[in-house]
Image 1 (cartoon, rainbow, N blue to C red):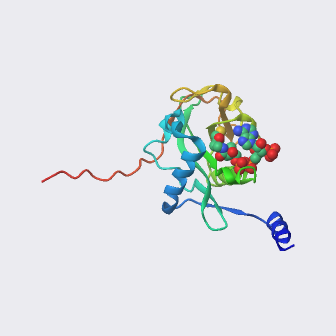
Image 2: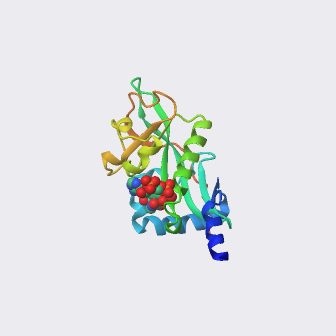
Image 3: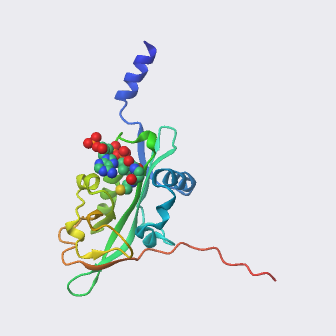
Length: 196
Ligand SMILES: CC(C)(COP(=O)(O)OP(=O)(O)OC[C@H]1O[C@@H](n2cnc3c(N)ncnc32)[C@H](O)[C@@H]1OP(=O)(O)O)[C@@H](O)C(=O)NCCC(=O)NCCS
């Protein structure tokens, strides 16, 4: 009986996870999670070219934690220029990814909670649009569609039907055309020490 009660309590528990800002102590757990969820080829993606050597957009590196504080999900967003508008002015936007959830927590709403938190935080911070490369049947529920990114290209191979966008500010991507290029701050690199 105790076991039954315990499982009922667990089922109705308000939440088995929380969404939090990523901190430096989460990096190893996040990278291990991404290796498990996305496999060894994850660093060869076109999106990775945009992320490499950059820091995520301010306040837009999020994790999901289990009750013990362990990282069970991750999402980060990156500053980019999403082509130019009709006047030739670069359009500031965000590139979202990677999003991943620990397989033992899949289907429990962790990915959705990360997505909703990321979109809300991006909007609150005044960003105009988010782009991503991913499965449309998953991301359409958060408002991402291929149509908005139809005249934009990634810097490398990508599938047009998986290149999606969400305008956080109405009309932000109207007329957007051209290549996605990184515009975020560079990662600080340690100075090279020369032998005396
Ligand atoms: C995709 C992923 C982030 C979803 O996380 P999650 O916490 O399991 O998602 P949620 O619980 O919020 O949502 C589950 C729902 O999404 C659906 N879903 C999950 N992955 C999907 C996909 N690739 N395409 C379409 N639907 C998908 C599930 O069928 C489920 O549908 P339902 O609500 O109708 O039952 C997770 O499965 C994952 O990390 N996968 C490996 C890495 C990856 O593929 N990342 C995304 C790159 S496109």
